[in-house]
Length: 427
Ligand SMILES: C[S@@+](CC[C@H](N)C(=O)[O-])C[C@H]1O[C@@H](n2cnc3c(N)ncnc32)[C@H](O)[C@@H]1O
Image (cartoon, rainbow, N blue to C red; front, side, top):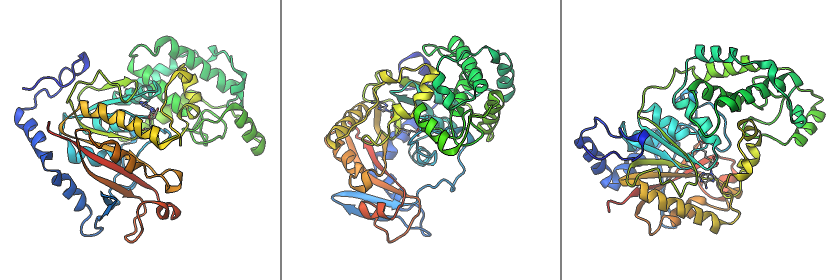
């Protein structure tokens, strides 16, 4: 039996029960780069053949490899987060490039799509994000409680004890709703402070509350506002209220938490899976992950300065008592600075990914298609101990003849993910 892959306590049983022969197969399989590339080439044949093009020396393979409708994702993913990817994306790579028990990691995990999908598929979930909010969104869904436990716990809260200390928040909530939110917030801050792993039921309730804070339907605590992953400022909300002639209505916080919990658990709970490791820190500095321990990385960094993660999450950070000003979220205006951040991240991934393991590095379309981020990633991987296998372009509305990257692609209003696939060299 090999050494445990990750050194510290929570991951000591890594690869337990898996015979060496399976590990040897894992290591041997990707030795042929053609294996994965061929499976991508043959994807969808003959109904929808994969298009293959060489652009500036980079092999692009284009198809509708996954869609939101193709395979219904597990309901536990249904937590909104800015610029998250669909669970079908990590599923595609986990299915093809790992075995049960393998470590699957995302150094920019956001709402935790990759570690949660990894856990659903019996892989060991590992994730990291610079914002502690990510752990609060991910951890409870790796170990969800039963609905009855959530209902019982909610009954123990003194909903009338809340004190409103920021009147600006009344732009979003009625006084009665805000008192309930403040009561829940104080209760959670006391029982589940950020520096401790809390009771799973409290952890779950906080995760659901974070997701119900604001939104555009009566399923949220707030009056009508932008979708839940984009909290506007209180000033902007007052303008929205004026324009729409609306006042924040009373909401039943308990009922909304229970309703969302039932919906998240609608596909069933979480199957048993190898123990998770969730970290808070920079993607390029993850010393808690042991060298050569990760089988697959599926990740997506911030795209230049396109999304303002700190601003979008200010209300969630308030609720969880996270000082968002102190979170060093990567936000790069220039391509050179962004590419340097990617390079440093890939250098760390070259350390943690085992020989023969893979990295699927997703980027989106930015700046009207004038900047092709996948090319910057491809270049950034040059000289590191990775084989650069291909760039996959997943097109949502697939047409055979369309130019699948660049300006004309954007002009057609299509929506693509571009994934640079790398394989860790054997030495
Ligand atoms: C595109 S989002 C990832 C979304 C994720 N794939 C999902 O499905 O939810 C990028 C994430 O990177 C995080 N981030 C920004 N700078 C970071 C850094 N230097 N190290 C680690 N995470 C960072 C942001 O907080 C954000 O959650």
